[in-house]
Image (cartoon, rainbow, N blue to C red):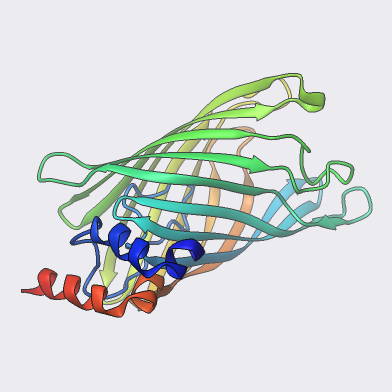
Length: 278
């Protein structure tokens, strides 16, 4: 992006191929609060941040608290770049109240079909984990993981549905290969009244290994759109089987910060917006 912005001719040629991509106004595209992600991506040129606080019971009076976020950028009409971060983890009272930074995940999401009357929006997502969490403190594995997700989203009547199917490759210690498991998600959301909405989700993981069994869980959360660019959420996860997260509470916010392309080339933004509204 720095190279493109420093070369007006190259930037104009590259931007010219992305016609009809600008939206008339900026609006957030929340991935929060569900585990599932929408197949639709962040608006073209928009930088968007999601951030939240999570607290999960680990059993026997122990709990884990996290500050985590997701930074997304609409690089092209149908491609966004994603950085999922866990900035800090507290585990108490396990092994003397451990704390530190968590892992980071990086990767793109590509939308290859946009919703029509009978077919949902379809997309693929790839992510790789940078093992930045301390393995000596028990905050992370210290090895690289991978995931590939198929995503489908559809509006039916007044309800929005998101379906995800994910395959995980979880690195074993000392680089001895990978364990593999799968996750299925079905999330649904609906506006209740005005700017107040509600989201629910059912999801489950297959067994990863003998130490990590499969489970089924559910999540429930109200949401409130302060503005189209700013959405807040809070909720609870309710485990439906043995091994599912228990007493998991969360609160967070999604904010569409700005359209970076319009800041670099405002004339292009105005011309595209005119075509969309005329």
